[in-house]
Amino acid sequence: MAKNMVSKVIKWEGEGMNPKEEARFFQGLVNSGQAWKLQGAYGRRAMELIDAGVIMLGTKGHYDYYGNYVPSRYEVKQGTKGSPVYVKLMRKKLEKVM
Image (cartoon, rainbow, N blue to C red; front, side, top):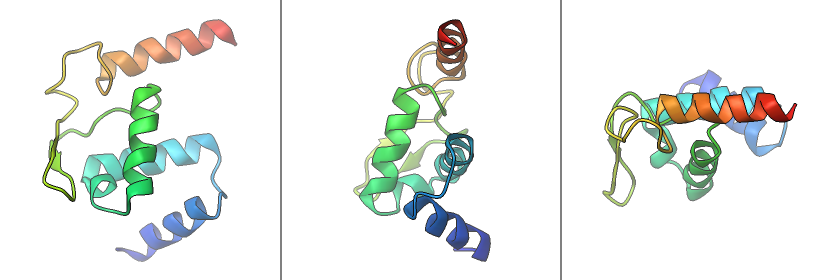
């Protein structure tokens, strides 16, 4: 891991990230495929953020540590979890509440 990545991991594990920083951090991990190769807490948190519409799947599909395929944002039906359309829909819902 690059030095910058290590500092981000330390910051996240120490609960020192605000929600926007966490979203950017995890979007980067998902895009690179690292979210699926690191310890389980990372993959679980990435999936929680994807399910909530905070982040989306990566631009390429990846295999996780166990050999399971995680599709790209373009391989899932638009409007479903992990797609760009789903993220937009969830942001609109959040704006209505606020």
